[in-house]
Image 1 (cartoon, rainbow, N blue to C red):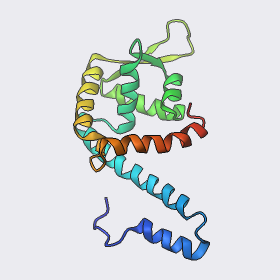
Image 2 (cartoon, rainbow, N blue to C red; image 1 turned 60 degrees about the horizontal axis):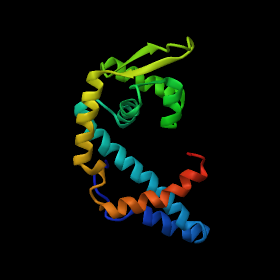
Image 3 (cartoon, rainbow, N blue to C red; image 1 turned 180 degrees about the vertical axis):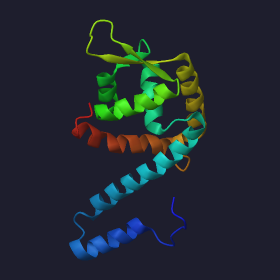
Length: 167
């Protein structure tokens, strides 16, 4: 968060400058991208603050929840990487942190000696449940939006995700 609140909208000012220097053709896309990126920063800060009492960051929480919802409470690290849509090295780092907190353990795959599984612990399940209650209570940091706006936002962004090959 900035140390002081601005008396103008910097994205609106960027749009004004953009239109002045580059024309109005790409202005809507520029402000849309800039707004999405700023919203991501705001939400990540809010979510991490909500999760701090559980010694979780949002990426750790997401990973924990993928394991929480998995059929057997465990997944190979490569599959976690795919489901979270992040690089395998990022998953390894997150699993290291979750393991040091006693929320997951690494176990050998029963039929593939090359694969390592991450398995959620009972403590991890408990923390996941408590953290989810806190996030639900806080509306996942989106208190400024009503439920209809949240559904609308999801629908607006979905074609971008589909076009990128998310699914």
